[in-house]
Amino acid sequence: MDIQEFARIFPERIEKIKQFTQGNDIKDIIGTEAVNHYKESFQNEGFTDETLNPWKDVKRRDPKSPWYGHSGQTGKFSAARTTAKVLTGETRELQNSITYERIPGGARIKSDKPYAAVHQFGGLAKIYGKKSFNMTPRPFIGKSAVMVRKINDKIKKEFARLLKGV
Image (cartoon, rainbow, N blue to C red; front, side, top):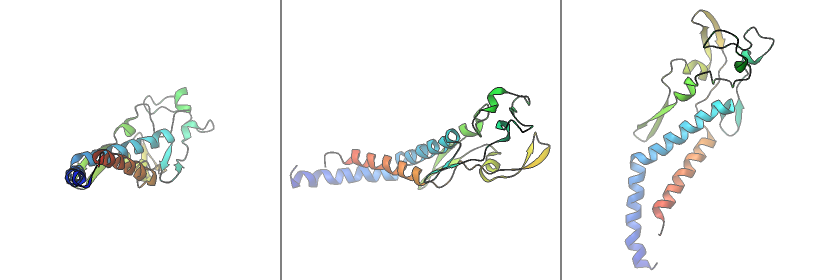
């Protein structure tokens, strides 16, 4: 490519990058990567910033606990619940509720489950809406260096694609 061809192509490519950074595609990359990263917390049983920070174990996996094998769906013992991952539940409702919406300048990650906050931050909760207890925080959404690197890598690949041939 000679300088004249470069001078002709370069402004077109810069315009494509401008459209990408100001449009919805970049917001979709941010939102999708963030949602995927946060959903991995449930599979990893902990939150990853630079490294995995495991969640405190649950009583339903402790054979010495009266909650051993407890099923929140049936209220009865379930052998499957003795080994089920923390915060996965039988329906994976909380994990599946993590979504994003485009906002000016990026994407907002959200869950429509009213109990998401008590799992994220800990605090007073009730068993079957009756007996109160203090829930251990098990954060699954937050600032993450690993997630930022994943997002940056995807955006860099898109820039490279848009600049290909320059």
